[in-house]
Length: 86
Image 1: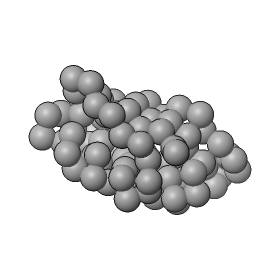
Image 2 (image 1 turned 135 degrees about the horizontal axis):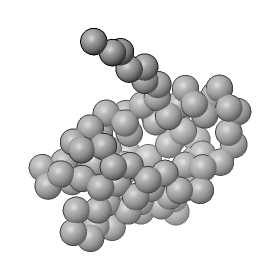
Image 3 (image 1 turned 180 degrees about the vertical axis):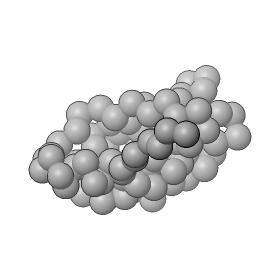
């Protein structure tokens, strides 16, 4: 059985010393919230300017609620949640 390594957005931001991400596109087949939770540092410091998150219908409300904690402007269209900083 093969193993797969993973990391978080925040770990990548720190490792690569990123100061800004203009657009983060998330299409994770139901794991959207887990990915966003691994982005708390980047979200709180406004490193991620805009997000496009494709969500399963049951995940739209939790994703919106999570992003609002970081004062992102939220809009939805079909299965997509769009967020941008104020």
